[in-house]
Length: 524
Image 1 (cartoon, one colour):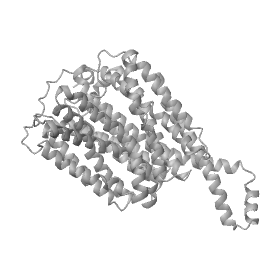
Image 2 (tube, one colour; image 1 turned 60 degrees about the vertical axis):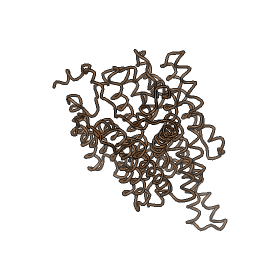
Image 3 (cartoon, rainbow, N blue to C red; image 1 turned 45 degrees about the vertical axis):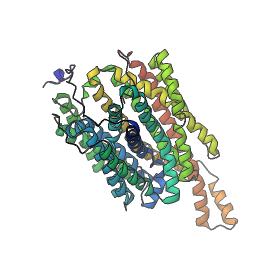
């Protein structure tokens, strides 16, 4: 098929008949709602619960901080890759059956993560955990809307929305508390009883074991393989590049070339395949493409800042994982009260102006973090982090509405999945980049401070005259210089992140006014 022909509007597909779920009412209906909300909560929680535990995990397993960050990126990348498969799996095996199986497999993967003896094995099981957790978010929402009658759809959406909003707040807090009091494996083992019980309950309540008539669902195996190759190779390159002197290493060059070739083949195949796993043709809509660019700027920067904050607090300021989690979790506190304001503003003003305000707010809040010092109190840091969270609903919900409104009605489902893929992959890439650059800038600033501090020799002599050994005196001075280098490196990165987010301020005006109205929660 010629590429030009594939870029035309595809015909609207015939709507598939949804699985017939058991008729539920009363307590059983609300039990199913709580169960589905729990699954969504657990899946989102595991995106952030390990953020504050990276230094502890890295120290326990003899890894560097950048290697410890693989625990975050591996889960996110695996989840992003599996999202496009969710629709096919639901049509082929049944939504309820896939949901229950994924929940049970998530329990097994969590157990294996908690028992991991090395960073490499832990990352491998985190990949499996991400693969199992990916279907839980979209299927929990879909099943909620199927089980609940239309008159209760607002309640179903509220259950799903609350669990989605609360999980990022609870993740760092729970992660810090569990890590400090019980050890890092517990942040994964805590999922086991929840996911195991939830999976068995889903199998029973939703009758996932009932016979299911498989619907015709062509599977794009070649597209999936190419997707895994180019994303996987690129993520590995970003994760290990620093340790191999980047492009001075033949390994890194090989990973870069392999990823580029696989990406090019993926583009060609997906644009010409009859049933692509990711329908890239939605990018022909200028509004959708511009929205994805804004999402990359905002959410990649937002996630990078939330990964950098607990690292800085624990390594530079000596915070425990619990205190770092409390600060990091503050970013989500203002999400719930700000969400109704964002909805109200979108109903009365141009949604692009609301996004503009939210992106500018977020950029300013991140840039403000670039003024940090080692003398800042807990509440000063807490307040600065709190400000950023209020910006999230101001751009996320209206941007989702704009992106879904920019595509044809029959493309909404594919566009929603592709949007989730873009958001998650960009966040994973941002995590690798920010941890690598943090170590690089720390080394640069350390050397610069030593070169610009002619009095270091005098301070060294003072310490030795005071009774310290020469080796101890050098360690003391190096620690002082290293702390200042970490602060300068952290501030530098926050300025870079803030500037990157600010790119979205201009990009949002490339989005045309939406031709139709879309509920942002339903379009997730």
